Image 1 (cartoon, rainbow, N blue to C red):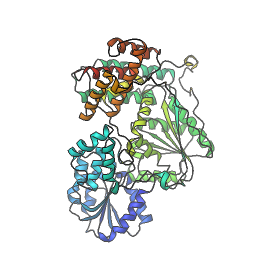
Image 2: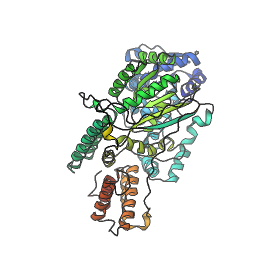
Image 3: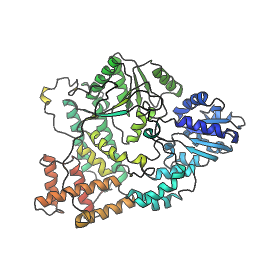
Image 4: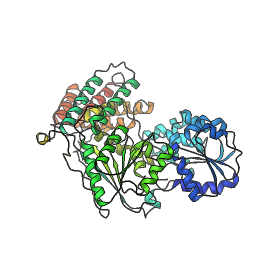
Length: 571
């Protein structure tokens, strides 16, 4: 089901119904154990629930019978799978089952050895990145339904990735009888609306200079990388570089402890929180960087606001205490790390959610947002995403459009996507820069204070309108089959996608850029596949003479490498 629709309560109803058949095992993230205990006490007091948090507690369990429910974590279940496998479980419940989406992990393999007469997998995001994730879940829920991993990949996953509607329909028909998929818009019509606002933050002068300095230095290092370096090593270096740039976009002090010039994102957050306080609203604030949350926590204290805090190091009891305090009105703001606070919490006391930085997969952000926008919420929820202008964050947001197709990839006929490849990451770095802002000279010397005032939170009765997205003029589109160069490029990209050496989203990007290069070359009477055409296009884009995405030069160079043949491109 969609996030926030009460999957835990539904699972408890199932456990009550199946209680006479024998004991049940619930495997959930460590942080959700207390939540299961509380929900069971409230909605299913007839069950006898044991929360097992260690190997010694597991060893102390006595004989189990009808109505008994053991709740434990994925880590403990994996370590003690043999011991748990000795019990004849009537029911097995896997909460937040995307935790075992990778069948190759030891965790997934270990859980496969725990047998039950009936298995239920609970998740709001059954598919996040690849069709194989669905295979992994069904290996636990209905072993054998989707065949072997190799046959599934060959007959279904790869064709679906390439856009094969027949394969997609076949897989949907296979899993359909075993999937109960309900969305908020379908079953919770009384749930208030959710408004999402992308709020642009302009870096200050010093922060922009530092960001550009590191971005350009990074590109020089990556451009000079030895072609013989293993692809995985190149990708790791690019990912490290992207992480540094993402931290800089949040606060240069995350990389430089001596930084003393503030952060425009913290300024924007402070203005938002002050206005929310004046209007009597509470907010959840998420970041993937705990170091940034620490700075946000200090800023919140300066504002005189009370705050709850939760990250991956928060013990389960303290975690639940913070949730209870916030829900009871004991704090204005709840600061949470994205991964630790993104699932299993009920935080409907908040009507505003603020994401300080974008995560690669929007499904993770959606899960976090639905801590507030869920059953029990009786007010509209407004979501702010603070995006640093002209940084890699804008590129990540563009990727979200493709990633959002994944949640319904095989359940409602949408598409699929792959993890970022090396060339895509380099393109993100290349595109995540900007010239100085027009009002740079008027900026305060201390580089502190919002250059652009944050959008003011609207009253509950009138949520703010999301800002209009910038539009780019589309280049004339060539027909791939009619142009020899495009046909050759498309064929090579298809082969690479099928072989698993190139992501589908990267292949689409190469083709899109190549079409623009061809249109550009035709207008200027250039040989479209020549180095002259490539150089002219790159120069026109980088100089601003041609309106095109900032990542085009990197993708254009990559497309030409693929066009020349497999010996010229980098995986």
